[in-house]
Length: 213
Image (cartoon, rainbow, N blue to C red; front, side, top):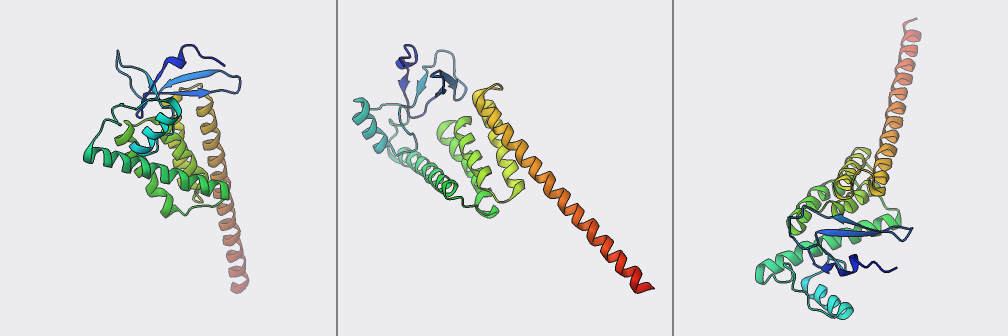
């Protein structure tokens, strides 16, 4: 399909919008963060979790231009720190994706610190873009073997989806279903634990009465 308006949107390695293709060939554009009046709308043409050198090489090879966005214009220590943050996010995304594909479950101590690190990295490098956080939080929720952590991450994903895509979006609906599923699972676990304690208490009382007779 040809999108005569969105095809004119320029690239930035720190985009302020995101475009989402739907199954009905509909293209939606969402604000990735607060956009000032008069600010140019920019999307990313490539995966932004790469170093400055790799981003520029890919953009030149695919689209024929040298990126001069605010991030690619960084020099010295600022450029190195930016690269470090993006490569760290790439590493986390790759590890989480590999674990999801293999069916592996992370333990609580491995996953819980990631939530704070994701927040910090995305806030500093991208200005707190909600949709980026949403994908990480969703992965943490699906990988956690700890129900409390899974629910916490799922709620963070829901909040990020709500902020990034709006109340009526498919992303919000998907995240809300995940939260409901986990909370229902937690209630079933709590019921089973309570039931087990009641049965155990009844057995102890029963044998105490026998011993008393």
